[in-house]
Amino acid sequence: MKTIGIMTSGGDSPGMNAAIRAVVKHASANGIKVIGIYNGYKGLVEKNCAELSTASVENLYRKGGTVLKTARFVDFKKPEVIQKAVENCNSLGIEGMVVIGGDGSFRGARDLTHAGIPCVGIPGTIDNDIVCTEDTIGFDSSMNIIIDCISKLRDTSETLDRCAIVEVMGAGAGWMALEGGIATGADVILVPEVKFDFQKDVIDLIKAKKANGQNNFIIVVAECVFFPESNSKHKKNVNFEYVNEQGIENIDKFTKRFQAESGVESRGTVLGHIQRGGAPTFHDCILATNMGVHAVNLLIENKSKRVVVMQNGKVTDFDIDEGLSMKKPFDKERLIMATNLNF
Ligand code: ATP
Image 1 (cartoon, rainbow, N blue to C red):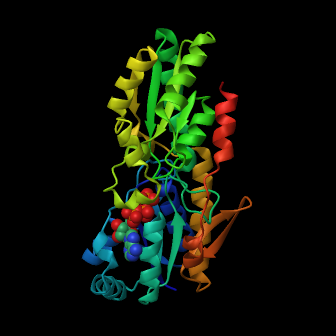
Image 2: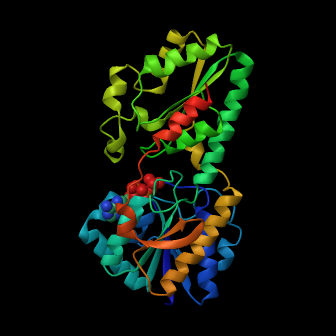
Image 3: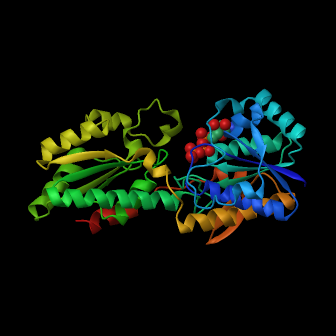
């Protein structure tokens, strides 16, 4: 193998640059040239690319975002578009491709492999929603941002005897809200996987805590609790009808209604894209480096349609189709534990 391509695709996550650096440096050490594809599959089809020298990636280990940029490009599901990507790879001499992204990006990698370009995926997503791996590049960094932000909101809420209502991202799932809520001792954690009753599970609980002498509160809500049903990507977990019935279909309405019914002065904060930015943590720098090296080794060994994963604390790999078909049930026990702990 003389030349490989590399792209970042889907949502960006801290640590993607560290993975790019590791891929380029390890490939170069093995005599392989690396072509960086800009804007994910869109850039591959548009032939928007440049060779990445080791010097160009030298200081990327802690740079946030992705220097290769990223894009969502729905047309990559069309056979004629995939064919164009294959033609571009052939004309550039690309014999293998490393795709850093989430599960959607791995579907693209699978299709590109079937079309003739061997691909290897690296899980780069803040959501940690790729079931076959215990860890994804960016999850730890994003969780650290969440707990840092909630801790800051805790300080001001404590000073002013308020309730901070914090909306966190999480790709249609409540994992980030659950773990962030547990780590910061949130009073209430609301996730789309578990139905909640606004009166009983939120108002009555906070009133009981207030009667117990508590004066400041944290409520963590997964953003997808408020997603409309029209958001097809996240449809599977959405409780929108139920949330809508309760008249709390966004964080502003939630905050106003909570304040009116609980009698606790409240402020709503949406963490949003701040969760994706900044330098990766030590954990993600190491993970990205180890996964980048493993991905190049797979291509050198002529293995393809593989996704690099963390299993039992070790970097290994899985067949993409096998990995994508795995399901991860939401751990309701942890939510119950969090609620009990924080009473
Ligand atoms: P994140 O978890 O951060 O959202 P992701 O990789 O899951 O990342 P998606 O938007 O789902 O993000 O997918 C990224 C890109 O992968 C898409 O824009 C598209 O180009 C390609 N892709 C997604 N699904 C498929 C599919 N079924 N077949 C081929 N390509 C796909």
